[in-house]
Image (cartoon, rainbow, N blue to C red):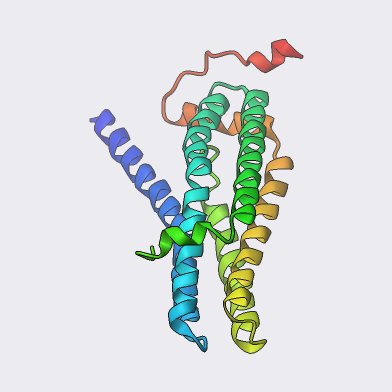
Length: 218
């Protein structure tokens, strides 16, 4: 009977965390859909909507590898924190962020160098480990909607910058989100995160016999 209650509680917790992830990712993708709507309000909507769609497809391609890293680092950080290895968790985050920046920068250079050629492929058709889901969801609301979309509307429609203004506003929101999350990551007390993970393990009946490797390394 006790196991049944524990399983039910674990299921509820899983659904809650899954919902936070859905909201976090949904806010980001809904922002891009609003960009399509805003592009349709410009003077030449056909061209603007097509161009915005191409931009979103290119962005999707560029983010495929970092999204894979995101899935991997989520599991890695969770395991390291649960095992009481805060330094390993921090190192994993640093490695993934560094690799993502290098890969994204490479993509950006490739796109800039081929900016007059790569759009030809669209001629036929236009195409969380440490438990920060709630925090990131609020950050997404502020960055994507309050800053990103507001800037997109002002620059694209108010200041008549067209699609460049709309997309620039969204990129501004993305840049702000990246900076905020980077600051949060750099200021994170990984020893405290590891302690919190141990408390969660103890709460759900896990074993705390795993000794911290970090203490032996220092």
